[in-house]
Length: 72
Image (cartoon, rainbow, N blue to C red; front, side):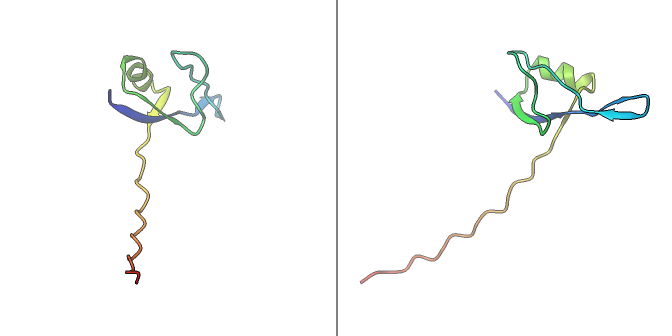
């Protein structure tokens, strides 16, 4: 199954920004920093309701391989 990285959107009430708690279907809450989850109908509904947002994760730069030295 395809995986996506999402995080809760901020909750704005009377001009005040609050942290939003989003329930996971198996219990608990989505981490405030975001989590990788299955791309299923549950999370697609949360995206449509703008309770969560899709986060594009940037790939970390690969470390160049170290040269191999011949041993005698």
